[in-house]
Image (tube, rainbow, N blue to C red):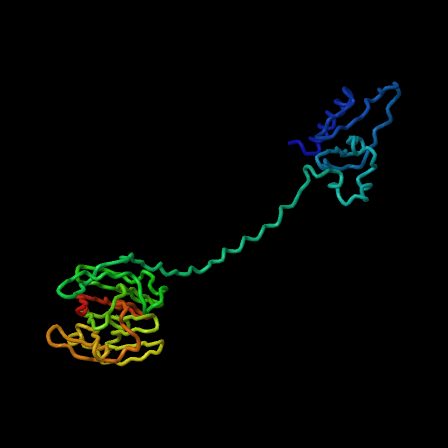
Length: 335
């Protein structure tokens, strides 16, 4: 088997024959130019080709140089390197990479980028569902007004004289079914919520007004009031198993109360005695007679007064139940 030296020798002999034919040898990306022996442009003899010590086949940035294996072998220099006696003259260069614009040079891979930080998980805040709102009737006919053998329906308008309008927010459900009117405040409320109806103003001097009541439960409030003006009014109020008799006259508030009994206090009545000018709070059960629970002399005339039915709840009542009114009746004196 031929040694690598013999193989290289054959390669050099072929190169010599190529030079004798064309005077040029193409090696790789460079061109080795060597005049043909005995021939040049002027016909003079070409100087001998420089011999170099034994070496090897080298690669310099895609340009190749053949170096001889012995004293009788010649060196074919690349055209681009002909001005250098040896590569030692490159001492001024940091490396052969300085010969090139960078094409074909080695570029280290960019450093691996750090992975992006995981997204910050923002805790979700559970929002309470919006409150349920009810459309209550703007006006309704409830109960009857009696005078000298005649009876007419009593008309009521949505609103309240006891509570601020902001509390009448539609969260209390109002249902009328014939002679029954129910008001159901919302459960687990965070603020006050009420609904109410007010009659037209009329002369209640010497009159009596009666209504059947089944109050809302717990801390809910059920009211039946006689109103002269915002600063003067009188009311029944049931709350927390207590029946309260309230009066407010010229802004001054006073009250008295008794334990509430659903049987004995099934009906509530205001009665004004014209002769004595006394206003009575009275109650009775489904059967039996009226009993006076509270009384006072009104400081203002009842000649233009309104009646109110209302109910609502304060904060923290889980189940206020339903306030129910029925069989309302207004008896006016003979004219």
